[in-house]
Structure formats: structure tokens, C-alpha cells
Length: 449
Ligand code: PFF
Image (cartoon, rainbow, N blue to C red; front, side, top):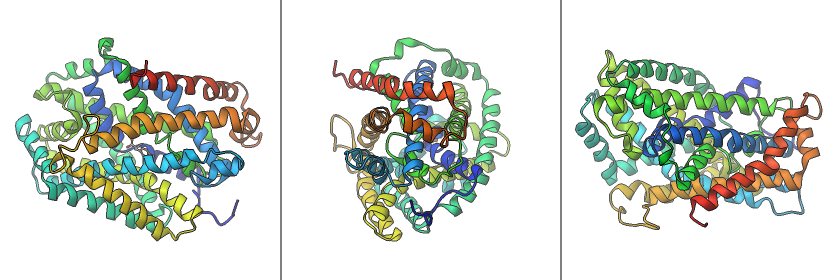
């Protein structure tokens, strides 16, 4: 362990950085559209269960691995168990990071484009056709899709190459509470719309007829994606944690805060869906067509809309920095590249893959594999295959290789924190419950049996 290694400096800094990774387009874009497309409250319930039984335990496992080993996503496993091959988890993680960034940077590009549109005073309409056309125009124009994505990638690259995210950390720490407040404001506005109760019923009254094995797999995938786990991001961030940090408590706080942001986004969006006649199952475009309608219907809407998209852009930026940090840390630490070289290689690879995703609304729309275009394929493979697979392997690493005694010692900060029943319960979850549940859900969801 080298003492010159970069790291987070305070308990609050650790919390802010970890939350900065978790909160992002997953809350504001993915959670609402998946909930809308998969029937509402039933999906929400399965997602909550997956978060508690699978997402949180894997998150705690990952952070503790990183903190014990003080290494990147590949080295950490090798440092803890040098003669075994668990470093493969980190390799899978790097692949997942590149695939996720390929479509995530595109959606972030849409958000940045909406910042520009909102600043120019556009988008103020409650008409579904007008708003769908505005979004469709952006996605189906190859030049603007690529331009916005590359602008985002350059920005991410510049910030990452400057070093551990001091600047962005300081910024997101201040902006995250404002995003939270703004979501409360539009949530309240949404609740005052005529027809709001229909939206709330959709979000909170479960109808289990929509819950198929494939849908359960999507909910588990979302739980991983949301908490940034299953691919070594939290191993990497855990390696920057302070030795005295309470890992399970930090993870639980991040999970609760993250869920709160998602719920607020749902409450902001679904009443408007029903009030203005949008379709809850609109898919990835849902947020981009319903949110402007809510703002258009309230006083000062132009200003609030601009603020909303700017803050969403910052939230996306925080998540992207943690995604890109995975390959960058591996390249810089294991291959001893300079940080800027590691960044250039990572961003370059993402740019190539990402262009395929960006153009899948136009030029490469017909390039399909398993019936999915590049954008959907990268999303599906990462969330529903690579992250759950990573989750199984991480749980198995802790449960079978690292072992109970060493893990619980790390979790209790070498005996400083009282642990007792909670820690033993966590071990049972990680050793047996989580991996078994994920295996069953994956096999059933992918139609293997
Ligand atoms: N958790 C982020 C979000 O919900 O937007 C996305 C993400 C970040 C996924 C980092 C995975 C990751 F490693």
C-alpha cells in the first residue's frame, strides 16, 4: 500500500463521491422509463427487493475489497489472493464500463442538447406530438447525435485527466442538494396536475400480471446499474476510502439517498404522463418528452427547465467520471501509463463504440444483433448480463475465497466497529442468498430454463 496514493479526504467527501457515482441518468432517465415500460408499481417492488437483497450486499463487498487492497479493479483481487484468477472480474468490469459509457454518453449528450434548447427558450409545450418531434429530431440527425456525444466525451476526458475528481467533487457536492430540491418542486407541481392520482396509482399500486422472469432480470440489472456495482467501480472508489470509514453504513446511506432521488423523479414524471396524455411505455424518450411538459405548465417554467437540465447534466457527469475511472485506474496502475495517456485510450475506445450507439437512431438503425440495435444491445448486455455476472463473481470471491474472518475484520475496521449480528447476516447474504438469487434470475430471465 503506497502512502502517496490519492484518496478521499473526509467522511462527507467519501459519501459525496460515492453518491455522485450512484446518482445520475439512472435515476432521472432509466428508472422512470423502465418503470413505465414494465407496468409501474409491480416493477418498482421487485426493483426495491433486488436493491436490498442483491445490490446493497454486493456494494458493501466491493467497497471493502477496494479498501482492503488499495488497488484498481483488477489489481485489488490479485493483491488479496495472488495465486488465484479473480482479477478476471476487473477485466469484465473494464468491458462493462466501456459498453455503458458508449450509450450513457449518448444520453448525456441529449441532456446537454436540452440544456442548449432550454437556454434558447425552446421546448415549452405540453403537446405530446410537438415534444416527441423535438426529441426525435435530435436522435435521428447523425450530426447532432455525434456532436453532442463527443462534446460530452471531451469534457469527461479533460476532467478525468486533471486528476482525482477534486473539482467535480466540490461542484457536485454543492449541486446535488439543489437537484434534489428542484425535483421536490416539480414533484409538487406534478401532484397538482389534474389526473395526478392516476400517475401515482401507476407508480404505487402493483399489478403483478406484468412481472415475468424477463422483467425480474431487468429489475435486478437496474439495481446493479443504479448503485454502480458489479463491475469494479465501487472497488476502485473503495480503494480511495478512508481506513476509519464505516463501510456498511456509508453504503446504506448511499442506497437510501439514491432511492429517494429515483422516487422523486417518478413522482415528478408519472402524474404528467397521465395528465397530458403521454404513454408511460414510451421508452428512452419518456423523460425528454414529459419533463418539458411539466415545466411548460408552471410559472417560471423556462427558468426551472434550464436549471433542471443543467443539474441533470452535472449528475450524469459525476456518474461518468466514476465509469471512466475504472479503465483509467487499471491502465495507469497496472500498465504504468500516465493519467492523460490512460484517459486518451479509454475515451478513444468509448468514442468508437459510442458512435455506433449514437448513430443507431439514424445511419446504423438497421445494424441489429438479437433484434437489438447498438444502443439497446450495449445497454442490455451490460445491465442484464455483465453486471449481474460480476455481482455473482464478487459475492463468490468474498464468500469462498477471501472468507468470512478476513472480510468481517475489514468490515469492522479491524475490530474498531461493533459488528455482531449485522455482519454475520451480511455474510450469509453475500455467501449464499445474493449469488443464488442472481443465478436463478439470470437463467430464468434469459430463458435458459
Ligand atoms: N449509477 C449510475 C446511474 O444510475 O446513473 C450509472 C453507473 C455509474 C453505472 C457507474 C455503473 C457505474 F459503474
